[in-house]
Image 1 (cartoon, rainbow, N blue to C red):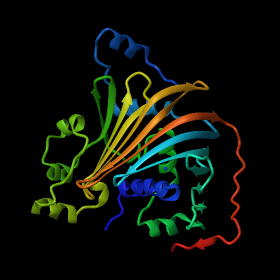
Image 2: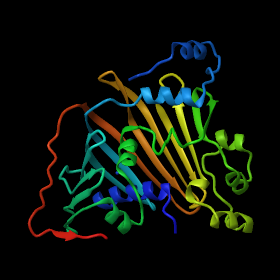
Image 3: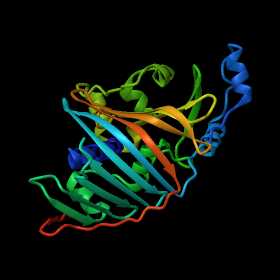
Image 4: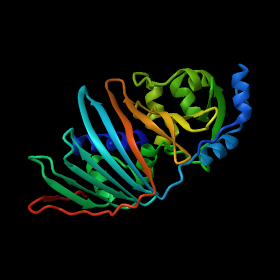
Length: 311
C-alpha cells in the first residue's frame, strides 16, 4: 500500500496521542471594499502566494503552551503540551496529563527523532532517524510538515511544482490545485463546484473504472489540495487535502488569530481526518506564546529504561 500525504499527517496525530495517551498584513483596499459590501478584489495565484509568504512567522525560537482535546476512534483524550521550536532546526514537545507531570518528551530535527516514554508500564526510549520510525509507523512524515502544522503555516505547498488557480469565496481567497484528467474522471463532479462547496470528497471504489484509475495512478496524481486565506490579513485559515487514492480527507483550520509582538498567531487550531468509516479530531488551544527565548535542548534517559529499535 502506498504511503500518502494524509497517512503521514495521520500517523503524526497518532504519535502524539500514543505518546501521551500532537505580521499582520492588511489591505486597506480590501477593507474598504468589504465595508462597502463589495467583493474582494481578485488576485492571481502568484499574487496570493506573495502575500502568504509575507505573513510567515518571523522568529528564531518559539515557545507554546497548549491544551489539547483529542477524539480518536471514539475515545477522548485531554492533555497539555509545551512546544519549543528553533525554526527549521529542532522541535521539543513535552506532553503531560492534567497534573502537569511530563510523561513523554519528543525531540525532532530534520534528520532525527528521539523520544522518552515515562508512561507507567511502558517506560522506554527511542533514538534514531526518520527512516526507522517511519518504517515502524508505516508512514513518512518530515520536519517541515510538523513545524508548519504547529505554527499555522501551509503544509506541502510547493510554489515551484504545484499548479494552482485562485478564487474568491466570500471574505476569503482560495488557492486550489488544478485538477488533472484522472481527478476529473475519478470524482465525476464539476471542478468549480468541488472547489467551493465540497469539503469531503471520496472516490467510488465500487466502480470498476474508478478502481482501474486508482491502480494505475501515483499518489500525487489523486491528491486535491486547497488553501483558504483571510481576505484582509492573508493568513491561512483552512487547508483541505482530499486524497482519493486512500479515500481520506484531512482538514486543518486555524482560528482566533491574535497579535503577539506585532505578528499574528492562531490561538485555536483544529485537525480532522475523515475516511468513509472513521473520523479523528484534535483541537489545540494555545494559552501562552513567547518569541525568541532560547531553550537548552537536552535528552537525558533515566536508568533501566528500555531502548526501542526501529529499522
